Amino acid sequence: MRIAMKMNSITGRWITNILSIIIIALVIVEVAVIALSGNSIDSSVDNYLQSQGSLIQKYFSEYIKENNYDFGITAKDVLSIAVDYENLKVQIFATDGHMVASTAGYYSGEEVYLTSVPVIDRIRDIATGESLVVYTAPLEDGLGNILGSVRLASSLTQVNVQKAVFMA
Image (tube, rainbow, N blue to C red; front, top):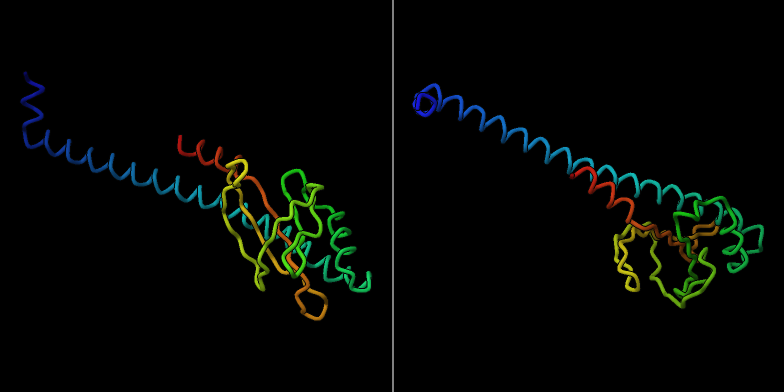
């Protein structure tokens, strides 16, 4: 009975109000940290794909000259460079949008729209339902002419697991 009386007093209500404000503030801070860590993980994946894509673009523009501007040969040779094929699927498309080379070892007849600037998309694979992050960038010769595009795709399964761990 004394506890109930103390909580109804001015001091009791004041303590309850202060504790409520502190708890709400802590919840807001926790939600902000979770959101920022999720964005940080996404940003890291984007930066990684961009760096690998830039490496392929640079190698392609230098190697195309050595192959007398033969796009098909250069595309297959570019796939032999040290790229993280265990975590990435790399595809090279000609200007007509048809796949010329792929690290998966098959040509699915997929088409992609050419882009004059690099683009990052988050998509869901139609066949598997898996979440993917896809980076598409133009492939140019040394003169700035767009000869095709490169597409790097990576699964977001591990990224989504990491986000779930942060939210737990």
